[in-house]
Length: 138
Image (cartoon, rainbow, N blue to C red; front, side):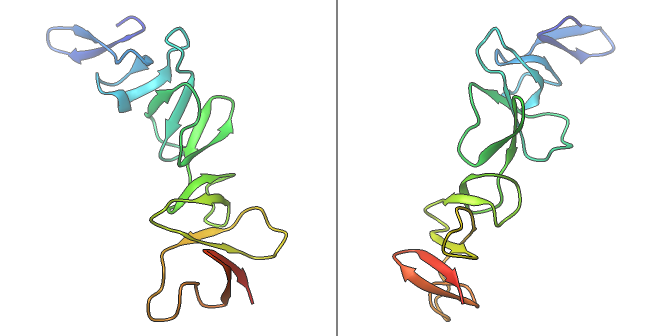
């Protein structure tokens, strides 16, 4: 099949159109892009894992993703709204469902995000609540 199309029926050799945001794909769904369409204005590939074969395309890295390399966005760790990498201690902002931001040091700009611990307080073991939802290491 030519670009913007995928082989859907091998027996009858039928090609179908990819989602508009895809340049090459494995199916018609937005999450089945192999490469992104720059002409559609969606050059940023979003993958759940770096070695994943397909993903979805957008005009920039979306919330819960970070730019790993040129036009490649990878999923942040659980709880991160924004991050600088995939590790759980690279969150720069937390999702509202994981509001407690844990920093190793006061001058840190990245940390991990956690839900409240009702039995042990709001911060994880080894951290104390500084203010609001900010936790520092003891």
